[in-house]
Amino acid sequence: MSWSSVLLAFLVSHLAGDFLLQTEFQATKKFGGLGSDPVARRALLAHVATYTLAFIPVLLWIGGTLDAGKALGAAALVAIPHLLVDDGRGVEAWMRVIKHTGRGIPMLNVAVDQSFHVVCLTGAALLTTA
Image 1 (cartoon, rainbow, N blue to C red):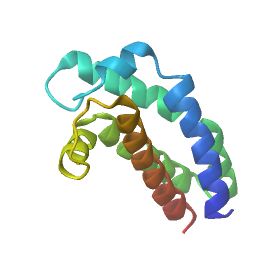
Image 2 (image 1 turned 90 degrees about the vertical axis):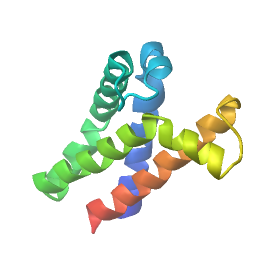
Image 3 (image 1 turned 45 degrees about the vertical axis):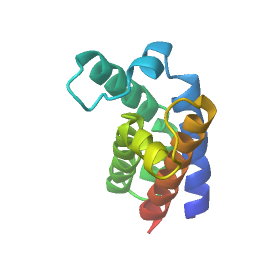
């Protein structure tokens, strides 16, 4: 099992989880979900749960090819960074400090958010197959 084959499977699962399965409520209310707002927390946690479910086929493949421990580790390496990125405050800080802009450019926000996801999934694929 190569890291690149795992990454490809992760990316397909990511697209399903982040775009096909994410509800409007989750997408519009999850910002700051790791903070004190219970609505944002519920939206973020529901999104991360359904997002992670999209990875079940690849996690079963990893478990069957490598072992169950690697599959559980991969699940954590997928879910936890997604939770942190989709809280949105880190992306917002990146936009402000590094890109010198705010949240007012929706497509740029999406591009930065998705870039962080791809970087995290690449690391997860590398660690899973190490």
